[in-house]
Image (tube, rainbow, N blue to C red; front, top):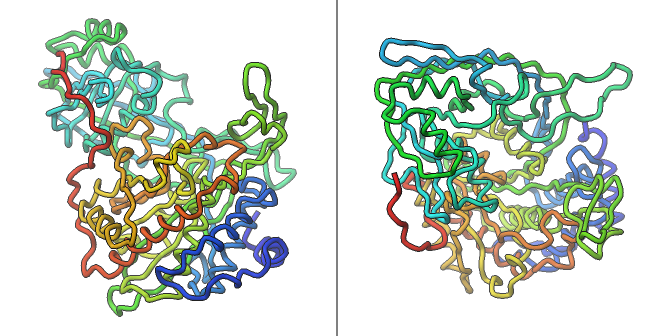
Amino acid sequence: MNLRRAWPAVGLVLAALFTGAPGHAASRGGPSSFEVRDLREWLTYIASDELQGRATFSAGLGLAASYIENHLREWGVKPAGDNGSYLQTVRVVGVKSTSHSTVTVEIGGERRTFAEDAIRFPRNAGANQRLTLNRVEFMGYGLDAPQAHHLDYRGQDVRGAAVVWLGSAGPAGIDQSLTRLLNGRNRHATDELLAAAVIGAGPVPRAGRGGQASGASAGPAAGGGRGAIPAADFTTTERLDHVLSPSATGSDPFFEFLFSRAPVKYADLKKKAEAREPLPAFRLDGVTLTFDINTDYEIVRTRLTQNVVGLVEGSDPQLKQTYVAFGAHYDHVGYAEGEVASGAEGPRRTGAPGVVTAGAENDRIWNGADDDGSGTVTLMALARAYALGPRPKRSMLFVWHAGEENGRWGSLYFVDHPTVSLDRVVAQLNVDMIGRNRDDKASEANTVYLVGSDRISSELDQVAQAANQSLPKPMHLDYEFNDPSDPEQVYTRSDHYSYASRGIPVIFFHNALHPDYHANTDEVSKIQFDKMSRIAELIYATGVRLGNLDHAPVRDRRGARLGKPLAPLAPLAR
């Protein structure tokens, strides 16, 4: 169903009924426009039970889109979606994939080709390609985890190489708190360390079920009377013709041949990995790998949702053709369709979208006040501030992304189908969960976490720091979650990462998690609106500096500022 055709007119009426006309807020813009009363009013509606948790494809999300639309129109923010509207239709497709991909290993004149019975690729392996690499590096467990005093890549440069690792469970000392690090090893090698390809170890999935999926899978059939929709292997909003760095899972026969002339045989390495003992690292000399990525994709299902997109044009005739992008996701996880109960063993749920907090067993709506109602209304305040106040030289682009909770659907779609030229976006500032203190600690009242601010452009981080120092009461900028070894892997978990994957410098403004994260108790009553307002001022000041900068922030990729200081690392056992 095309939600845009169904809801805007109705949304105008309903929004007025629920909240009154959107115009009672201060009419002036600029840095003085971040008023607590406006943030509270807007969030009270966005996170209300009437919107039923703002799940993707729900009527509640459509009402939220209309509410945002109404305010943008009132403030004179230009529509920047499809066909002169504020809405960009996001196509969410279910895809059936059939892989014919292979890896050919050549060692000392002997050559073997391994197919799906011996090596597996993700269901979405990207566009077909052929890639030959003659530098192959075995990197032990392929893991950097300074928390456990384990750094396989320390002192190693794997740029342009094929990386191989073993040991799905990781070395001794790695516990469940580092599960995200373990699961992200392939991405860490290619995205952070710029390896050309990676092959890891693990159980080879059954035929047709290998790899990683993006977002949710099957959904109800739509269209009525046309029969059952075939099951999809993965769901995505991304184009299927992107060339991706090959990422695969090997089997025993593959690794036995790969290590057949190595200084340490595969049987010995496997034994050590299963015992979680230290593994060596070495180059596989004389080995050439050829990746033949060949996958057939069939779209078997299409569903529609919407991003909300607005634009405040810049004041400079030339620089207004470039953009500072701001983003937040306006969806959440919906409501419980089944039983919501708390038993003797603690809170439990049936058919609920997240955690049930003890004492809230009768509340079946996950309102998402902080996640990401706080970012949604802060973005509204920012749009008003730029539209009604002094305009920077560059244009300011605002995108409320749909489907972040399903796998960054809206932002992934936007960077593949931008409504402005993506190569003219100089930076993206993402706002997700800025309404609370970390773990509800009063000591966090002046802290905001910056993630990604120096990973692509160290100059962008300097701009943010200068903006912070310009505030009457600067905030404490914490970089803990910017660390590539952050066990929560926050850098990859919100919409900014979709932009960063296209090489755009990003800053993720975040306040960390709290007991009500993805719980049915993430309510407006717990939001720290004064803190939200101050973070909005910081983001605004950062945007002004970026908007008036006479050049795009330099993309120097000097590496991430590290997070928490750790005890000195012991020498690696090899």
